[in-house]
Length: 362
Image 1 (cartoon, one colour):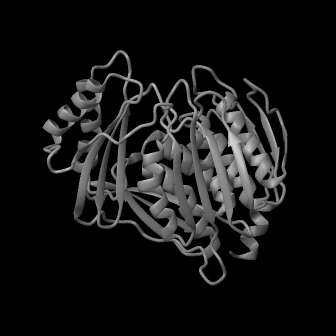
Image 2 (image 1 turned 90 degrees about the vertical axis):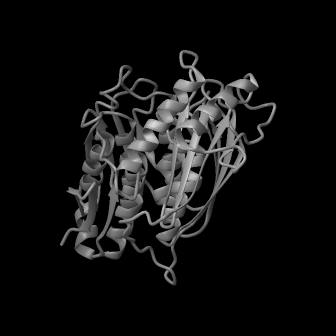
């Protein structure tokens, strides 16, 4: 990391407009993470202005409180429905943390907020999280464990995730543990290119339906198998065991393991949707990814951008990845990262995909 770059990002506070782009909670979470890793005060206005109910909800407050705990920071405006937040970070501290999110707020979004700081901390950390693990509008645990965490480990960071108990909307009650080992001088943070998937090694689907009639999961898997060519006999259609205390809830998940990357797609069941409709939605998502040549799917392209940008910043080396599409969510995240770190994020069309290049500013 160049000295002049460090001076640039710590010389002024980071001011973000929460109505930018898709105008959701990602601007808040990325902003908090950037403030913690740079030591730069954060001022956000019009928080979540693009949502039907703008301002801080309980799960967003949980992200703010987790950031305060990890760096001993100070905050103003951390109240329900607040649309303005001022966060002054302190020094990031490794250690053991436990965060509980009210009702079924996503555990994974809280982890997303503190992970960037803890992967640059001075020692390993253990983060216990309680709340939702399979939520609408949030990555499920399976996605982070199988798709996101392996990429983070390629940067030189240790990230191991353990699921203790699933938590579905609206009851929540899920539990997970994250073990984070930051990069070291002997194994420094280093960016990697992720340009190709490589050959497909394995693919399978699984249905989670704790607390619901068993036929729901069976019908979902049968419909998924018909569309994907997967069978129970080949072990490609699975119904993992669930605990009696989990649920009620329903998630249909498809996992594709390629030589260089894994992708996970998830659709949550709803009362208004039949099992067959849930399966069709999932297959449509998988097929859209398969029609592309991009290495990462739309959600992984979004989640991967900040960890990669941190590695680019700290190493001074550029890196790229390809993805099936760039959503408005991803584009907004790119704008936010470029405001908080001395990096350039360039998004250009590629053959059958989109290419994202993150490079350090001179």
